[in-house]
Length: 281
Image (cartoon, rainbow, N blue to C red; front, side):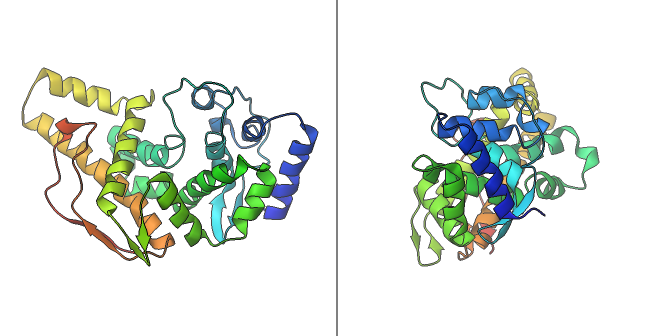
């Protein structure tokens, strides 16, 4: 595990060597020091910045705000959170290249390669782990800070507070939710927003084909097999959303949640959930 101090010194070196570049350019330059998976054509489309892989200096696990954090994942997500100069015509957002992408990619792999997993929970734990979620929350919060300071300074400032505080900032800022003491208000709205963004990721991702194949089947025939496939995807989307909510509830030190999920507005063909769900901390 790398020390945060050495990581910050490396980032400061990059910043000092490129004094005329914007925070957006520095963040995307740093992405070249993570891993090849974060410098693909998909990331170029998502961020609007073409970056070649250089080396894995930043592909490390560090303790950030008291939590083990996949730092390479954090930098990759951060590069799509900072303000981009000019216009951005990409449909990808910072959600899709962070938490929604983590949950969505786990669901896609389970749907298309189910023989490799015991169940969806195994896929979620592997491809949407706590260290991934920590990186996603950090990218969002630091992204808000970094537009007013350097990346290294913003990370230092972030590290000075507890992760539970950052989780609450994430919930209040990204999802416009209120928290009274340890009680999160309107958790159904949070779950619906998370599930919608994961669904949108699956729509946008050229690598999955999960939604396209299922919608093609649904449009061609109606029957028990189609209903089973539709119910399966609907259940997986809900389970994926609740997996992320469990992380936020536990790490944000919030009371357990109990609510009835909303209908998925982007895909009414997936049906509704007519039962309460519980998210324990």
